[in-house]
Length: 84
Image 1 (cartoon, rainbow, N blue to C red):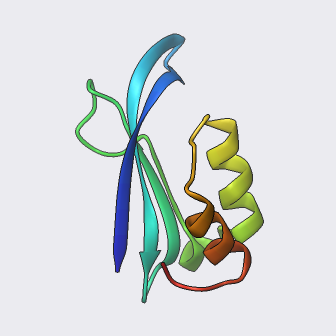
Image 2 (image 1 turned 180 degrees about the vertical axis):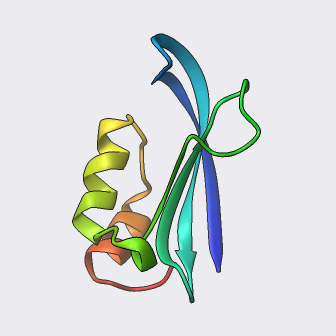
């Protein structure tokens, strides 16, 4: 399993722009996943994974939409369907 975190400077949550934490990675059961956490909530406000229908292209597109700067080796692993 891998899990990486990064700060998202501007995340829209409940009609506000807040800072958020993005967690993403690969798990042997869930596949590729991402979670978004905001300070005012204990549980993730977004929680998606391959096991529940997240495709690799959706993952990359959504992380780009969030403004996440994925390392090139992570992006390549996702495109090639490899764990990282």
